[in-house]
Amino acid sequence: MSYDYLVIAVGNRLAYDKIEGFAEHGHTVSDFYYGNKLRHFLAHEYKGGPVAIGSARFHQGDGTKDIKLYGGHAFPTAEAACEGPPVETMLSMATWLGQHGKGGPDKVTVFTPASLIAEDAGEKVVGKLLEIAGGMGFNYVNEAKDITRITKDGIELASGKNIEAELKLVFPDWVPHDFMKGLPISDNEGFVVTDVTMRNPKYPNVFAAGDAAAITVPKLGGIGHAQSEIVAKQIAKDLG
Image 1 (spheres, rainbow, N blue to C red):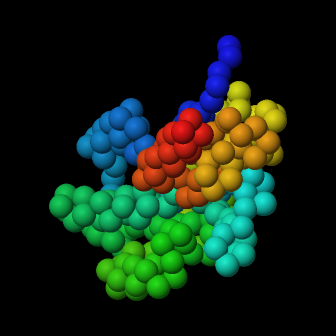
Image 2: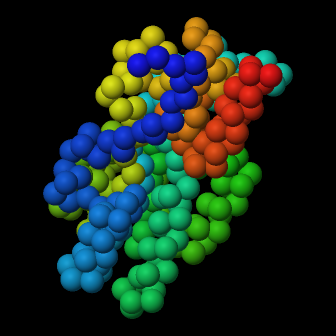
């Protein structure tokens, strides 16, 4: 197959298979299948026990090591791919517990592999969120490092801490598709290396947008949308 330009926008794979015990004991809300599975569990099996919600560690890759931001700052690293969903899920879960007479925020523990959940939002914003959430009764565990295993009784974390939970709602590592690994345009994890114009530095007619791009951190739909506009404008500029 020949091309004048190649735009890679194939997304990532949610690596639930890397979490030991997820298939037997875990839940999530990342698609309709899992959402329906959770709905059935809450309606027919949940007994009102503790709830744990959080993310596995994200393996970012080295594709941004040569990118410098304004002011010469190095490109940031992230220990979780996207932590809006855990925050949204913890709030939704607490509301559901209250509406169904099964408790409230004090039954929910949210955890993060990083030192600060949703760290891309900034310390000031997250600090206020944690202050409000703590006042409501939510439990918070940071520096979990990763999910080691999910069991019937809870979640074992790489930090050595265990969280007791009847309901385990988790979000996995976001990994490149296998066919992206080992390519000359990809980094050591399989994300496509680009500059800030979404162009591969070695192959200038190759672009990437969205989660497949190494520069997309955190992995957000809005970022991918903006990147697609950058790609379109770059190609239009090339073509005059």
